[in-house]
Length: 128
Image (cartoon, rainbow, N blue to C red; front, side):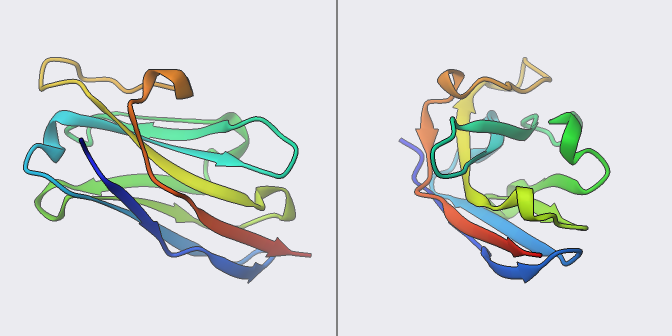
């Protein structure tokens, strides 16, 4: 198992920034591709972005490109989501997810059902 714990959420005004962190336990974090998703009340879970095990490859939801950036520090077992120029429509619970890929697959995944491990989420609220 890969326990995941998100942090860094909060209330911010439109145009502001937040950095979310997702800390993982275990010694094999570097063999996992990671994803960030979000879920607003009454809506389905939505892909935000993902990052390969090495950090060399990322993929984003079109509406967040240029505003949100995913990175990871495998030495710290942590993946980050830097959120800039936030909009009210970014308001949601943000969850990180992990899938074990080994070191042979250089990509990441955009569908929530492909991930085997999830954190509890952290609330992000953007006021207008």
